[in-house]
Amino acid sequence: MKSFSYLSAPDTATALHAITGSEGVKFLAGGTNLVDLMREGIEEPATVVDITRLPLTGIEELADGSLRVGALVTNSRLAADPLIRTRYPVLAQAVLLGASAQLRNMATVGGNLLQRTRCMYFYDEASACNKRVPGSGCDAIGGFSRGSAVLGASEHCVATHPSDMAVALVMLDAVVEVESVRGVRRIPVGEFHRLPGDTPHIETVLAADELITAVELPAVPVATHSRYRKVRDRASYAFALVSVAAALAVEDGVVTDVRLALGGVATKPWRAHIAEQHLLGAEATDESFAHAAAAELAPALPLPDNAFKIDLAQRTVVAVLRKLNAERSAS
Image (cartoon, rainbow, N blue to C red; front, side, top):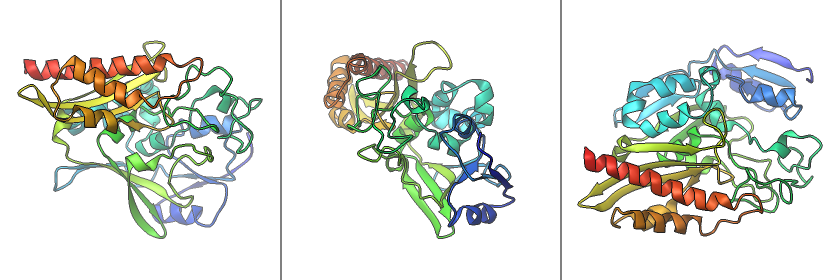
């Protein structure tokens, strides 16, 4: 591992000034991704700024019914919070399916949003990877592509985004609060992650001098009836081949509100807007669910090893919506 300087920031102002105008500075929270990347030589910061002492660990209910979650709230605490479990069960489920208990105890909300892909070519220094070395190529294209994206990819990158939590946040229309010495700005989480295009190494819209300070969850009534399903190669501690975050409201057999997002199939957490448009006002039937899922996956561009993801994603969408509809009918 390359030598680096270490600074433990006692407050937000110190942390922001440490990164402003400096190159090669990284914030350290739980370290569950950054430390691994440093060990692999993918990240080589000149300075690591420890932000674990900052007052960003609260979960606060706001006047309008939304929740403000500090960026240093651990995944374990987020999933266990009573307000999260009752108002946003999809988020609690996504977090619990995301990693081992040990990792959840360390990983933070802000860090989860910034974690980098687990594409094998990204981690293999002998392989060409435009995320790791811009302009070097993408060996996943033409290589083993079973885990690669079928939505949102480009000729420069087909790596999937690894987060489960972010898929639920996209479905919930969460907002990311970031701060720099220039002030505070709020970014809809659906706009936070970038598609790879021809610059796959630029993964978010976060500026180099900005720090994630919180995530705000808006009051979403339909979210109380929501579910997260993750399909993977083994029952635990594996990244998603396909995941679905969904919420559904039905009146007199007709869909009156629906939220859908997909993970494991795209280069960023994928909001299924096309499927949602097809479902609003439609009958709550398997046929409608299947039609909407097929419309969402119609633009998919599979590689030789991952065409199965298209059918798997469609069937998983139908299964989750069917389950939500059955639960509603039984309640």
